[in-house]
Length: 255
Image (cartoon, rainbow, N blue to C red; front, side, top):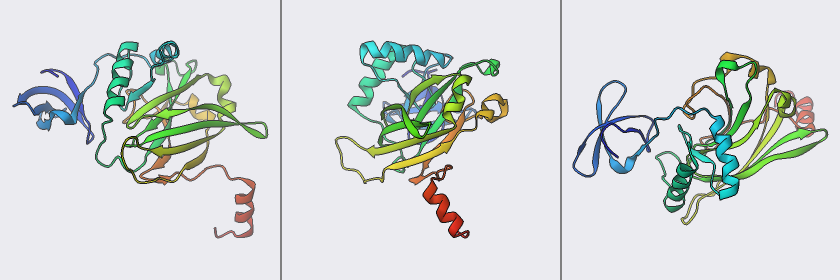
């Protein structure tokens, strides 16, 4: 880390550019308002300056199948090369960085356009965002006929996001009803047991044609559609009702 590097805070929202140091342990970070914020060196992380399109994640994912590397990215940033993916994987496997408040589970399903300027023609990428100090094992499913089809499964490291798939508009009909299942845990330490999460969402394909439905957010450098799965240990209410739930509502309108 050196003067001029762009950094973000690990234990709280924010970041800026390194303006100087106080001894070996304190770094001065100049925020967007021009104020110098003293932070411990261990509480900040250097982030890249490159402005890569999200399609590079797909290229990395293809390369990682040959090298066995992870495709997770730190929240708020992107992996930009196989070498950086390898370095990040090494760091995460050696020492997971936990943040204050991260022991409450929060996770999101996100859709990001590859080319925001060509929204009528662009393809999209799906991500699972893990905004917690837990590892998350996930399954991502969609309805197909009278059953479900597994679209992806894997593990997302704490405080990272995982690329799931790329799709085009021709696939939107297959995403009208999706399900995300999560199992949370920590490694090499004791932790509070969390209930498994099972949430069904209805994805409105019309929103992929409207610019204003893609919003600025804390997880991506570009606008995205963000669907909460669980926030602060509270699972999102499933939008889709099964036949048993529908029957209960019809029999008891006050539910």
